[in-house]
Image 1 (cartoon, rainbow, N blue to C red):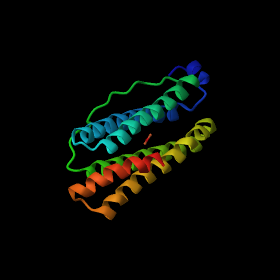
Image 2: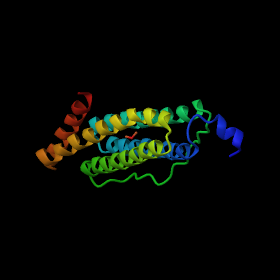
Image 3: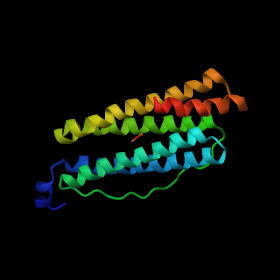
Image 4: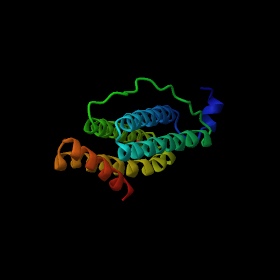
Length: 173
Ligand code: FEO
């Protein structure tokens, strides 16, 4: 990057690279939730499908929040390529286990970004990321609460139907 462009950047260039990686992670999460929603739809799990379609949209919003932040600060946000989406799941429980794993990975990369921003004294980005730190805490909690339902109610076909209804109520709370 040319020096003059570097000076116009309101954020640290290495942090910008990590933010672009985060855009790709959020886009992957959005695409992945969409695939999960589709699996639930096909398996007549309408409550879970509704929650996961909504979750996919939220991840897209996270992606765009970072996208605009980079561009608003004189940087270049890149539209990511999305590959390797899982479309097949063995059970509804597996869907939400995958969702929790995905959220934990996103939390780790957000924390990594906060750490890097602090290290290079990019306080603007550090401040911007605080919203994501809180959001990740809430998203992990949501997935853990859903997974608790499987422990409580078991995996019989009737239980799965009841869990599916409960998931919709839980995420509306
Ligand atoms: Fe935006 Fe759920 O990570």
